[in-house]
Length: 228
Image 1: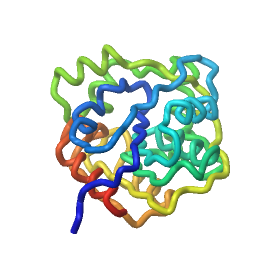
Image 2 (image 1 turned 30 degrees about the vertical axis):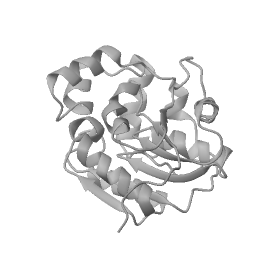
Image 3 (image 1 turned 60 degrees about the horizontal axis):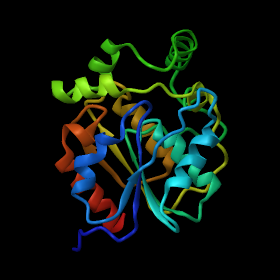
């Protein structure tokens, strides 16, 4: 069976606050063009602003989206704005809210209320201790220190805006990270159900599999690109 990826370019969507370099090793292993989309840094940027920024940076024509964490909500909005350009969507430990609900609204209670209150009071940059113990669980100290230093707060609207009605691509997949301290595997399975995909793979990593095991993640991505 041919496991080489198709020539469709890839647009990587990072989780909230994360720098583009988290994808470097995976991107270097892929024989296709790719780009890591930058998010708007305005404090009042809407979810639609995020999606429009992604489309402005994406290659012309059709592309595959690889969406991590809250990048799943951004990918959903991209699909709502330009369904004809999204040829495939691979969600990686990603939030996929139902249409009409937000990232926060798609979290289970009481987590959605607790997280929403904390963000309202303290903003969208987690304390360093939380970044280290949750987001970066399973990583080496060098990567942890870089993420702590480079973490950038996002707009509150990214978390609170409801995703639009969308047409998701026929080619979808989901990577569940089973040692994840940010999104438990059970919650990820619910998001995969919302995505409507039967193509699922598991990785025994924390929330950042592209850093914790880039070789294995790269192989999964190649498999998905070859014919999910």
